Image (cartoon, rainbow, N blue to C red; front, top):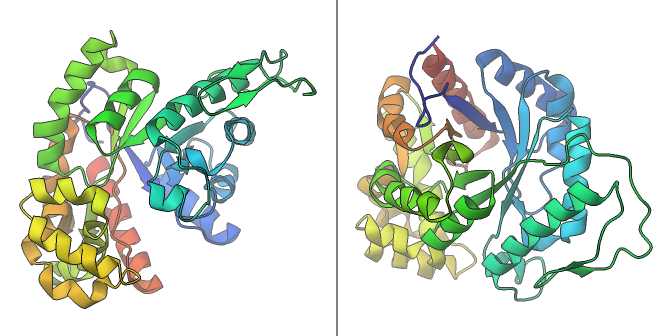
Length: 350
């Protein structure tokens, strides 16, 4: 058993992302993850809500926590989010973490058709409303008058008590302001996969320290969870090539431009953005995404090499959620790199 500790001086924890799959496949993954030593299983909201795929995980495991990683706050009412969280906490016997994120307007407005909210304001409102509902639905709710969410609950039936009146809420963050919000109001910070080792340690660690001090919180008051991209493959060249479409796709999203610019890839990012406007045609510009750009964001290679590259995340993080690149991969490739993450965590836990 590894004696290496996390940034809070506690045992290092690993999260794992599960895909949407059949109940049988998902339960098999849960058993493998629990045997290896993962602490938490999580599911992304790409389009649909991330709660249902977590149910088989909860049913097939005894210790695994389950987390929405993340649920897009603006895609549903805080009332629904609160009751989904309480349902999940009941199903899991108190092992649920509500991970929330704002997404971007091209998703919340362009896909979900929601109003053009100020997304940070909306997320703050959602966190406060969800806590209000979870803590009080079984007692009789007082009216809530938030910036966007307003409800009088006049005809609401008092519900059964929740498993926990305080379900942990974690916030996903990319930029400084969202990171500050997470450190101010949430129980955990989920760092974006574009937070590289250098970005995390050089740019975000000082911000985290300043912000916690500003809001009178101790480092132990919040969990910090980093999501490094990894492509575990003894054939490093193949790992780089397989990772290139994912890096190109993210470079093609204009709100991420500042991250790519900070790493020296502004020109390449703008080429990818132009391709992205053509119905995400990033495959046409893969030759403009050099190996150095791929390796800046994805740790590629054998297990030992990848573990060495992601080690500095532990200066900041309490837990890691290694993610494999996924854009334009076959199911066979996804399963291969998912297996590589299992190998990575198993090696780290030794």
